[in-house]
Length: 106
Image (tube, rainbow, N blue to C red; front, side, top):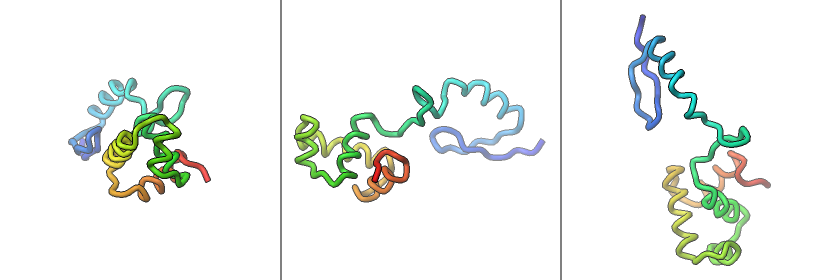
């Protein structure tokens, strides 16, 4: 049976055949890509999602901090963490991602 590379968690490619894929799929039932109530899991925390929604609405860091009862530094930290997790370099990229993935709505 020919070996074909497949991508696994962590972005590492491994060699696999049908027998390995069957065994891997049997073990991966708990690692569902869906969260509670059948919703897709986001790669960012609920608080980072909340901050991103405000940013997508055009709210300044200062105003996000006031709305969420946080310090501006905490808001900036949430922004940096979500940018890192999404592998992005700017708030604009994150806002585009938010609209494309249903986090923010027009």
